Image (cartoon, rainbow, N blue to C red; front, side):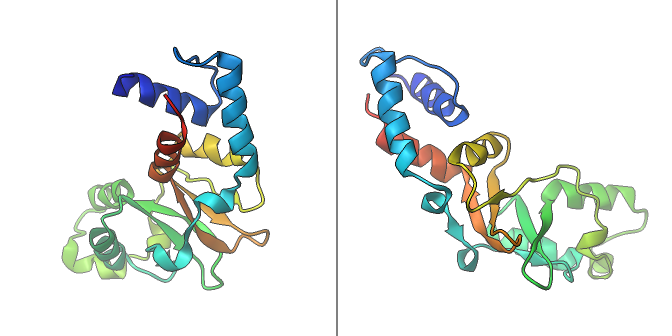
Length: 173
């Protein structure tokens, strides 16, 4: 099976879009995937907070640039002082802030709080208790999905890369 066909099938499964495989009856394949998905939950994909780079609402633009560079992330979660998920800041948000602020240079970035930077894209979080389908729907549009508890305390992230790798390993040709 070609890479493009395999990726298309895996991505379709993530989105819940009907698909067909040449080597297995469609209903049988969907049943096997659904059976396995029924035993999975959001915790199965969680990349825990202690392994994730994040910013605090008290952080400044310089700290954000440094953390993004060190972590090789293109976007990073922001938490408040109580550990609650506040939002996500992207490299693009930083670039737009630089462009929109006359006279702002690298030497002045320590004066700009991250909470004052406009977020061009809203990154949605998912509750740890939510259905796997809710998380998969968000992962289709986001590189990662922040995961929170019932009180909105940040628990970690689910990376789209890990979801794709999981389905790649667990779907037979």
